[in-house]
Picture (cartoon, rainbow, N blue to C red):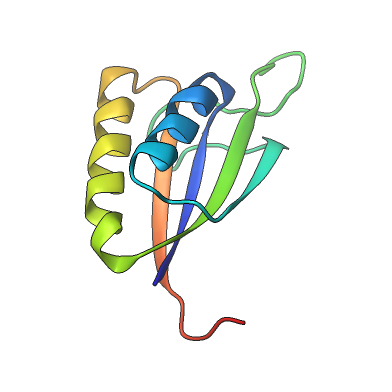
Length: 97
């Protein structure tokens, strides 16, 4: 099992949830408002007067065989609208209860 942290512009929310549903990735935690700035491109998401947009984040628990299909869909979304910002990071889950 893997943990996938997805950080994204709030405009992506419905599409990401639909993708998780379509791939039967059931377990996740969602943070509606997070702030951040991409490491290479894209506008900051600070929720401030100068940078009013906000990000969201999802931490999903994903079966190993579903990670690559999920990342492929997310990467395609990001390529279509790169300025919005979407990133995904994968960690191994060693134990769970």
